Image (cartoon, rainbow, N blue to C red; front, side):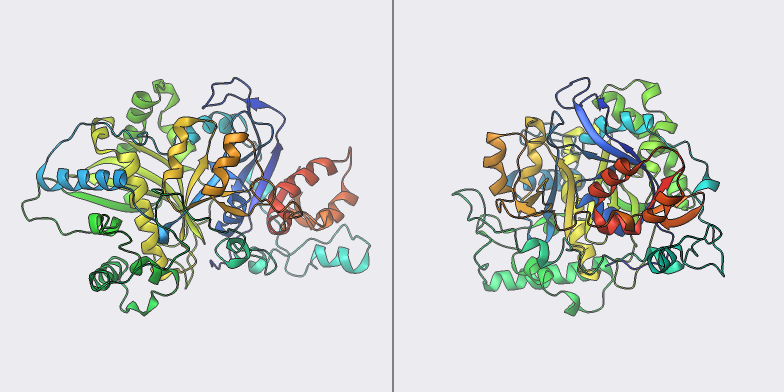
Length: 525
C-alpha cells in the first residue's frame, strides 16, 4: 500500500443534474453522471474512488448514474497475474514480433476487437471542459497555524465553536492509507465474495482447479522468474510470493497454449532485426525532461489520431485540449518503500519505433492497480493492432510492478458497456471482474453477463441483504475546506450563512463513501 505525507485531496462537487451527449448510443442528453473537479488527489483516494465506480478525464472525476444513464458503464478489472492470453491476443503479439524482427507487414485488420481500446473517454472529455473549476489557487490553500487547535477535536470535545481557531494542516492529514475498517480491493474482504463459477466448455481454464505441473513448466517458470528479475532489477527471486508464484506456475495452462505474454514481449531479437521498438515510461510532468522533450511530438500524434479515428476538427484536438485531457492530472506523484520503483501517479507509456513515437498509453499507477486512461496511436500503424497490443503490454507491465509491490496486481480497463456491442471486447481479457453498482463488490464477469443480457442495469451482488460496506454513516465527519480553513461538516454547518447545502453534501459523501469523505477536503465557497 502507498504511504505518503503530502497534501490532502481537494475537490469541488458539481452534482449530476444535466445530461450530456452519449458517445455510445449518440443520445444528445442520455449520458447522466455525477461529477467533481479534483484540484489535487492522492493516489489512495483515487484508488478508493474507482473502486466505487468513479473515473477521471483530466482533472474531472465522474461517476455514471447507473440506473438512469442511457448506457450503464461498469468498472472492469482484469486479474493480471492470472491472465490467460487468448489465441487472438497471441496473434497480435506474434504479428508485432514478426514486424520488428523481419519487417513483415500483415495488413489484415483485427476481427476480434476494435483498434481503440479506450474509446469511452472520448465521450467524457466533452463535459469535463464545461465543468472546469473557476476557484483561485489561493482559496484552495488551507491555512497552517502552528499554535491553533484542531477544529475537528474542538467540535467533538466541547460542542462549542471558537471562530478564531483553525486547523493545523499536518503532514499526516493525508496519509495515503485506507481506513483499517475499509475493505481493500486487493484483499480477501472484497475477493472472498467473488465466487468463481466453473467456465463453460471452450471458455477457458477452470480457475477453481490447481494448475498442472510438468518438467517443461518448471523450466519455463525459472526462465520467466529470471526475466521478471531482469526487468525490475531485483536481486533475488524470493520476492515472488503468493499470487506472483501463481503467475509463474500458470505460465502454461494448456498444451496448445504454451506461451504467455512475457514470452512474446521480452524475447531476445536477432541482431539483424529490421526495426527497434522501445517502450518508455514517462511521468506526466512538465518538470520531467523526457516528458517535456517529447511533448510536441506526442501532441501532434494525438491530433493525428483524433482527426483520423474520431473525426475531430483541428480545433478539437490542439495542444490545449491535449494538455487538459491527457496531461493535466490531479494525482500527486508519490513514492513508497514497498511501492514500485517508478512510484505512483500518472504516466505516459510511449511506444518508440525506430526513434519515432507511434503510440502512447496514458495510465495511472495506483496502490492496487494500473488503471488505463487512454490510448492514441499513429493510424499509419493500425495494422499492428496497437489497441490490443498496448493493453497486453500494460497487463505485462502490471505483472512486473507486482514483483516489487505485491498489492499492485490488477489491471483496470475503464468501463465495460454491455449495451454497446463494440465495447464488449473488454470482457475477453480473462479472468476479469465487474463492480456491483450497489454494493461495490467485485463479481466475476461470467456471473454478470447473463444478468446484463436480461437488463442493461443490474445489481451483481445476489445477496439481497448485502449493503454498501463503505456507505456514509456520519455526515458530520465529512471534511470541508471553507475560507481556507479545514473543518468537519458539523462545524461548517453552524458557521455557514445562507440556504442550507446539506442535501448536496449528503449526496457527495454518499457517492464517495465515508472513508474518502473524511480524508478528502470538499471545497465550499
